[in-house]
Image (cartoon, rainbow, N blue to C red; front, side):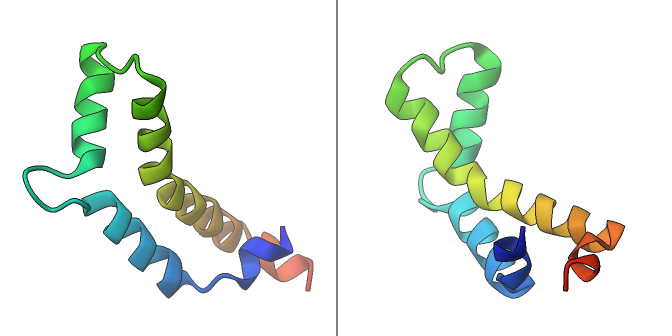
Length: 77
């Protein structure tokens, strides 16, 4: 997972915030897609892909935080 360790926290945080909030109007896609998921309306493949696209930076950020907290990013160097 050296590729994950090479990405700066600042970059991932900015991507997570940006892709989590775009488009800014009328409502963020991530919020819209999560509402669709909860209500059972997330059935189209393009909607599922859109949800995965907007949530991917947050997953990468969580993985990077986990590696940093457990010290796994320091062991491989």
